[in-house]
Image (cartoon, rainbow over all chains, first blue to last red):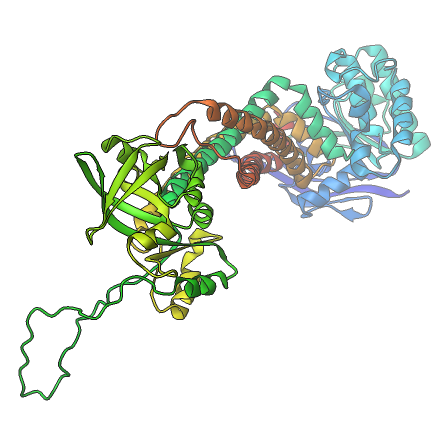
Length: 225
Length: 411
């Protein structure tokens, strides 16, 4: 199988309020189309690890390769373009742009990439929203939707550029069980059928147990994978 | 529409109240800039008009030689010379052949108007009232071109001087002090003791009260007759140039070609130049301070916007927008504010100028406050306004571009 992500000896320390090593040498690899969950107690460093993997946090030691590209030590602006193309990120809280319409929110990463004509994008965004069961709200302002709906819009946004890796920081954290199942099913399909890699941080044992692989972190180290 | 512009536009239009406040601060700055500069410009023009109603840009006259006449040639060192009370004894008064000088002056492309004058001190008499003053023999048509005297006529027409040899036009103060009005007679007595009676055809008021109290004008032909001079005699030749600020260029060139004293208005009138300069500097300082304050207004609002949108900026960055995109988004917003504010400010500035121009102000030759409409003020105001907005918008935008998404999103 093709390796999509390899993490080599990643060490991360916080210096505020006092020196503290969050990640103490993390090593693992993820293959294309794998659906991985990262679990662990709070404070185990799983969110920190995810932000490092997402290339947003660049302040760490060790090295990370995504899709054959070394992303360690690359300039922020280049990383931004890389994220745009290769990584879809779903935050713990929806984090939509409240002043934009739902469909604009979904389309923004694709508009930034600028690879496809706007009509195609609009159709694709509608399709994704349909898939996530948010229909008939496309032209509404994002801030008018319920929390669960907004979270699903945020997931649609993460999928719009067909990224190599989809990362989620507790993506189903504030969804009801029906929608959690739906999202899980979508992730499952994406990884099986499209070969997209999914990495999620989760507290939900049910969610984790149905993944291809569970990586368990404890005190900044992988204890089980 | 470009994605960044679309985001900028959405930000702008989602908070109309904030947009209005920001636009108003630019509007205020720009309109005040235009008004202040127009006002000072108008005042300067008015002052120049008054100044140049009695003074031409260049005056040519026959000056006494400054050096002492040497009566005895210097001999060797062991001789002592005593000369008491040395004086010029050979001096031809005035300009004998004025036409020739006028031709030379007209040869310069920068020269706009030339006129000849005979100026003498005389006594004006009406009954027992006797006042000394200056009599100007003028070439009416050219005089009007140089000084615009027809504008200052209170009563009568200056061109009537052409029609009557015994006509005279008096300054308003002078007419009052010898108690005459249009149609009355006044007797002149020259330094040589010649008397002649003139009929008052008109009264003028230039706004410079010293002039109005002492000056009178007759036609140059009558003046030549009165002072028994030849047909091409003049005491002064007055020349106007296109740009009075660059008068020295012409006057120095002219001085080489004319055998008389050529004097530009700047010689001996530097106070006029410096006061107009100071007014301009003052207007500049005031209007730039206003623009700076307006700039702070924009800075404040943009800064607030950036702080409010901290999380959105982090999200945009997480989605792949880079620092340049973020600067673009926020700079575009302030640019819009600057352009809208600038356009409205130019309108408001024009309105203020229009209103202030209606305020009556009846002193000297003014009827209302002088404010100039000048294109250059509008261009400069817009230009400065835009620069201030760009700076005031760029600083918060740069701050926004440096936001670390991880810090914001992790909370």
